Structure formats: C-alpha cells, structure tokens
Length: 81
Image (cartoon, rainbow, N blue to C red; front, side):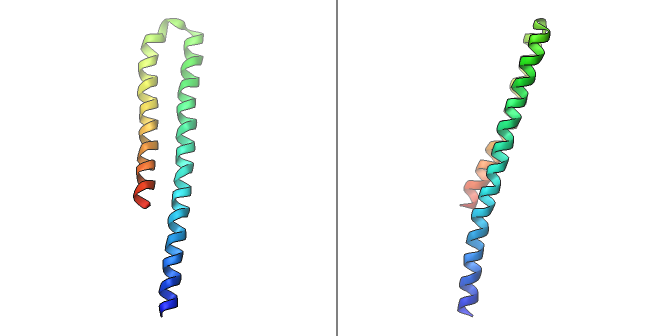
C-alpha cells in the first residue's frame, strides 16, 4: 500500500510541473496577442494618420486585457507551485 501512495504522490508532482509547463503556452500566446495588437495599430496609423488618437486608446486597452490574461495565468502557475 505504501508503494502505491508513493507512486501517486510522484505522479501528482509530475502532473503539477506539466501543468505549469502548459501555463507557459498561455504566456507565449499572450505575448503574440500583444504583438498582434501593436502590429495592427501600427498598420492602421500608417494607413490613416488622422486616427492616431482614436485608435491608440483602444490599442492600450486591448493590450492591457491580453496582459491581464497572462498575469492571471502566471498567478495560477504560482498557485500550483
């Protein structure tokens, strides 16, 4: 019985680190999301410079929301540790 318990604890420890590794994919996706937001705003402003003030507000809000998801995932990873 003791070996089964020890095996289950080792399995749970391994799954914990696997889960933290999967959270890193969320961080990568968030980085790509922020890059996409700013790539789009640069493209939009280069096509029509008159909308710079209108569009930049939405870009910062969008980037902040994507970063919020990344910070939530980071907090989840720390909770798993």
